[in-house]
Length: 180
Image 1 (tube, helix red, strand yellow):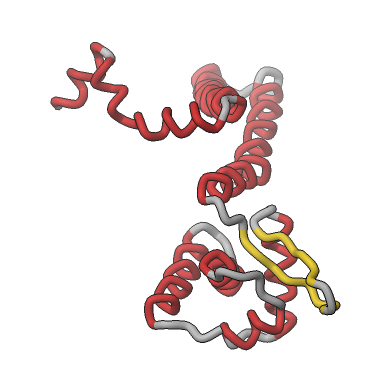
Image 2 (cartoon, rainbow, N blue to C red):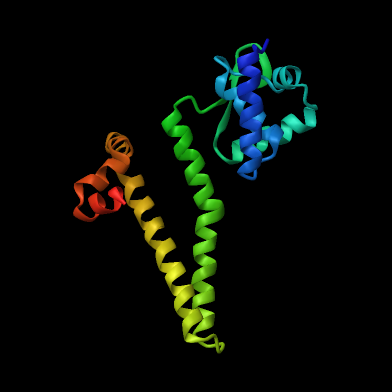
């Protein structure tokens, strides 16, 4: 695949963005290439296009598959796997959010529950126990909200996202805070 300057800039920026999110630059670049590619690509195509080592591409594809961001398919007459990213941006965003929740947010909630339980009996001061509890309660509230929204049909989820911050204008307190 021949990359135009705009395609190169997209891939490079996606790689930079990935490093800020804790993802290896080349993994993010592989994903960017698959995301903008109109057709599935083989690992060799990815190596040639991005100038990456085969082992780097193989490991990157495995990581992207573990995040459920990339899938492989077969083509008649070709023994190689062909890789493609999730095409629908809503589904892609959902996969990223769900992956981060499973890998980061949910384990933090579990750890906070254990810490809060331990703090009840290990001599931790009341003020610190309250702060731990407040942290757990707030994080649990956001997780509960996410789980509730995740259960909604896609059309309603999209409507909620599009409504966004405008909902604050509908709430009495929201009008005051927005003017400040």
